[in-house]
Length: 176
Image (cartoon, rainbow, N blue to C red):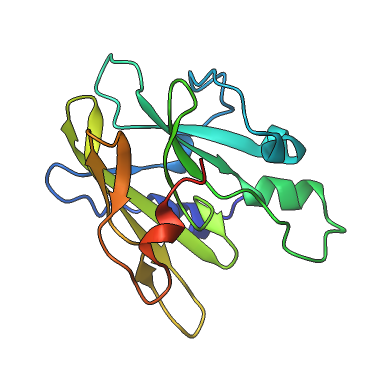
């Protein structure tokens, strides 16, 4: 199971005004999280470990956006003989109909040895206007940020605003 330290890192409250932090505790199996679209075939191997995390939900409103991700630690706990890091599908930001609007190049909340903290806000229409992801990395390279994602209603997608030393804008784009 997840260590308290890992959960504390993933859930740390570093919210800025109008931005909220997505907690792994908000994530659940897709149906339980209100996400009913079909998963792509490459997710089937990991289906028991797939979580849908509602993003940008206002009190009492239904989610319009979910982060689909594989919770790696429970998978690894259930597969103790696994010697190599599995080829997990990359997390997707998706709408209720399953349309991918952005992709993350690392698993949320944990992509060994890194832990991700996702913040979103302010809401523009039904969607968070911006998504920021901080990566806590205990390796020599240290912590870093993923490219910032901004909602573009005309393209009905999140567009990466910058390249970073670790990733390009393309790494954040859906493979539709």
